[in-house]
Length: 165
Image (cartoon, rainbow, N blue to C red; front, side):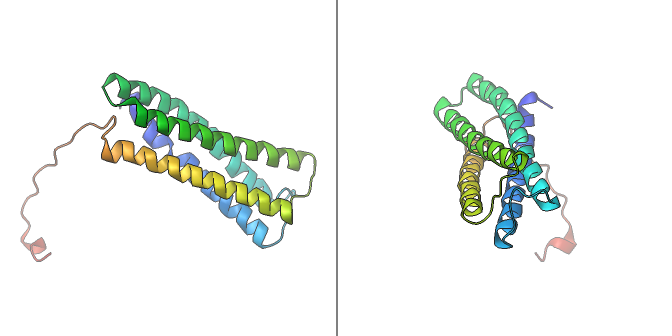
């Protein structure tokens, strides 16, 4: 396995963790709970948020390696740099949200009512950036073939039982 193949594997962690954080914080909001309360769900949501940011930073590090390899192979820099900029913005948004939430939890600040709505809306905006970043990354791989090794499928043996399909 090449080091450039680690980035596409790593990107799934921040996507899932940050979507889980959105789901948990949305649940806490809908059930009118304090988002920064010292409760199991609040701690879990914060852990998903922090884990999502940490894994996004790791994925971005491997993305830099993949970007350099793609440029060396002759892929146009503009699309690669656009994806990198989107990722940086996404990481910045979620990093600020994580610091805000951890600070609120540490200082025992109540995050409910309008504060909770604003926080969840900020996570929704961050999630929009996250999905836009993921879409552009998918375009680089599936449309442009960045750092993808061409594969020729093996011919399939004829199976008479499947000929009806």
